[in-house]
Image (cartoon, rainbow, N blue to C red; front, side, top):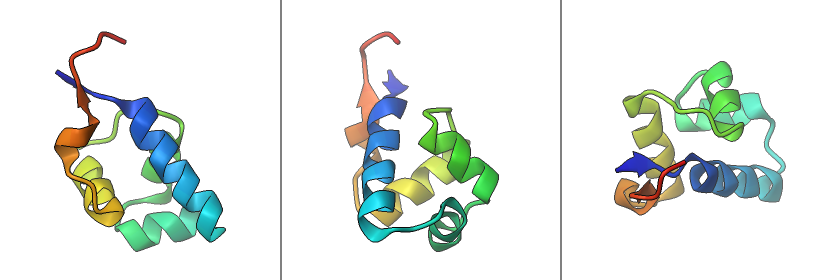
Length: 71
């Protein structure tokens, strides 16, 4: 299994645009660094704690982002 980074990025980007948040503001609200937030928004794999913080902030169970599909 792997994390579907495209789906996570899509959800975060939608929320970012709907709320008109900057990357920095969104990162501060989630509790991660702006650099990490930028990487996630660009579909790059975050560390486990950052991934879990994003899921908690989105109020989505992390298992919803797991997939068995290859890249």
